[in-house]
Length: 110
Image (tube, rainbow, N blue to C red):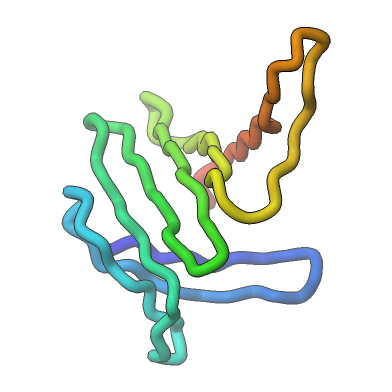
């Protein structure tokens, strides 16, 4: 079970859970109120301290790669935007498109 308690600047602060076997099975999150979402998640374990979580939504999605530090106090997430929806990024002098890199670092609460 993965539990989420988000805090956003715009006042949207959802709490939801995902029951997963971490083997890539598609699951739907359930809000703390008991209501379900239209989104789907696919969680896949990549190693002892690594897993990947992919959001599949009607407006696109993203893939997050998580890794927990060896001491278990920090988790780092790298986000890859999906190919659908609004695309942001930069084109270099060779004409190659580069998506922005999103890195989130979470510290264990005491």
